[in-house]
Length: 202
Image 1 (spheres, helix red, strand yellow):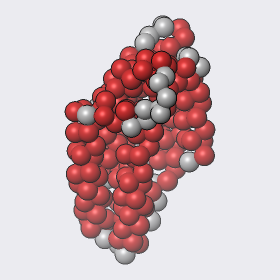
Image 2: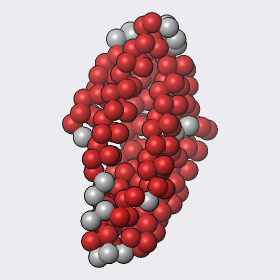
Image 3: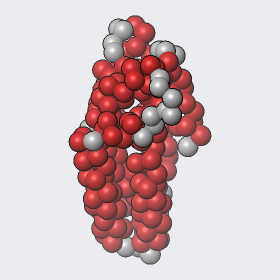
Image 4: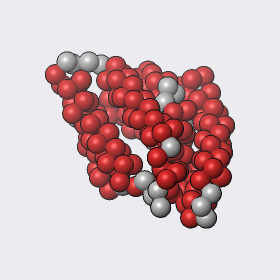
């Protein structure tokens, strides 16, 4: 977890190195991303607990159903977030409007709006991700989830740096590529869960 947060911090620092306007836009977007993510952590903890309990009782099929229930709960919540991110991103951005007029903030608004709308691409996948990570951890498949998560998070760092500083892509396009990579990471977790090897762990 520490390594993941460290990678996330480095990624934010790369965004913020692009200037005050982009720094403001990315800060606003990541604040909303964090707000939307916190409830999903509760789902992950619940799924980890339930799957661990049922696997310990020798009931892998019930553990599987518990994991799917976690996925459904997360998706129900994330649909609401998706709607907000797609249809009222500017309203969300304006929550951070400073009391005094700011040219930097005004310039950051369209960038933040676009980044929030791009974030809408992964909110449903994020719900699936946290539930499945919880299930795999609860079943004892901790080594795979840890390695995969750390590798994925640290892959974001060079990808973002190259996109911004080598190919000189816009911040929105760079963010889009990171989101696409995140979806690949989610696909790996789905593949691991669907493979069913976690049900055989003791």
